[in-house]
Length: 518
Image (cartoon, rainbow, N blue to C red):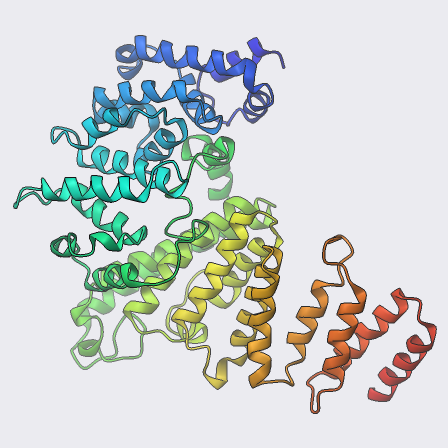
């Protein structure tokens, strides 16, 4: 495609994301930047007509996100102009979910004009969402070493000092969250009065604990990842938007998967309402917890639980459908959303194991199944972001479920292996080894700990770590452990290694050993 063709493809809306044109725009970045800036200039000059739908031009959305990915500073002033027009214009141009993107766009195109950002944040006539979103720009700049810690602390302190006593706008809740997320302990006393803005007591306590944590900020995991980052992949972001998924949604809604899920949700809603009307204080609670109503949902927002369970089913159903169609990235995003709901339910209702969750809440698919599909997607990815997401998944499984209980040995040992494996793939070899070795001190007969470590050095495509001698050494250590579990798995891998090393004598020895074990 030539530049003119790319521009033409990007000028107006199409139900399907124009991926080819966007990919070519990225390929011809230098030639496309002036064309994309022209699109923003056109948008600025014709904003009223575009806003009132007298002009169907749509190129602004591609221009803003591509220029953000390109780190084009000249796009910054166009964003500021748009914000100063008012929230309704921002919402129309960037989209209904602009709070998810506005700060990321601003940070990606940042040109050093702090005054422009200050004037928006401090203008009480602006929408609370706008003010909060623009404030988040500085968090991204701080995390990427563009702004110093001292700058952030001083500016937040200024805003807090100027706060009027009865001003409980969202801006101050945003400051509270950013101070805790960024662990700005210098402001711990300054934010003490802001905790009253948080209604949920558990969330309030979590925020208080977060600022006291001694751990370093990890930009690669939630809540930092995604929310406080630049625009890195415009195509991937837009590919998930509903406006480009109409055909996909129609296909999904015609599938048997959707119809089954829709029926499950319909029956849950029907039964929920019926049981709620007819329940007595001493009856078993209709939520399925197995507890009496008076000790369960009588004092809880049970309708919220029903909505969360429905949401989990909806997201898991579509994620599974997408996964089976080979659209793993989209599937992982939906699994992640469902997983957040599961975490909230488990904390609210004291669910301590995956089996307990599945026994309590019947739905489209059991957690035991789909959480493993989610993990498989993350495991198959080589993207750093997905690997950190995988560590986060297993950390949360350990945090929420009582996997140290003897009945959950499988999940405990799997969590150790998966976290160690992922740390190794991220280049943290020493940390990965320590995770396994710490557990082996308590349980030296755990075969799969040795096998996990040995496999790290027995993968030919990993030229940096490929080391058959090291793999052999680990497995020989395992073979000599008294009472080692599943020794056949160790012997089989040693046989493979000796075969690869062309050590014919040991190939025979281990063939005999395996036959003897049989």
